[in-house]
Image 1: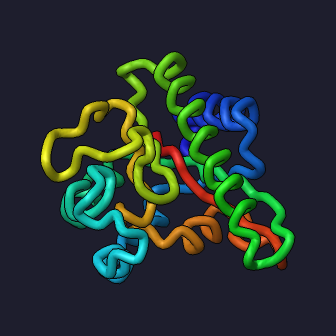
Image 2 (image 1 turned 180 degrees about the vertical axis):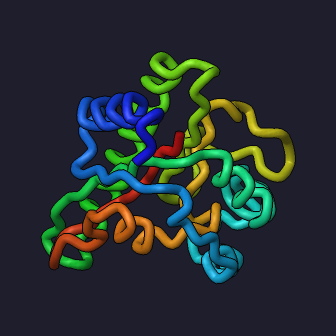
Length: 186
């Protein structure tokens, strides 16, 4: 890991712990391979957000634009929220774990805005489409809070399981567990 970025990485880890993330893992952005097939999966619109959320494709930018954003940074930190399920049909727990992860991401973003200066730019990515608004204004009107928007790792073309592996942390924690993943890059 880049010695120049060591203090920033330590701050990212300390802030992640304070926000309640279950696990973290460092990575070099060179390990990220932006994949067209991830964006193609978004286009299948299984989550009903494709073209309907500013943080999702195609509104979040082309795959090339997303890759250029990623390449502005040298390293990052995986942010995981893992919870337990009664069984694979425990939709109540799935929703709760996802909501808790989104709340952690929002707290993390707010703290980073206070802690990191303009000299240390950063990029925060989450899991799934941005949920800051009850109803996204896309595509009818511009985003009402672009400074609060969090784009998903998948929307950027990142295979989350591959980046977890590159960070030396698991992606899967066993039966009846669910992990939501985000990351921050500096």
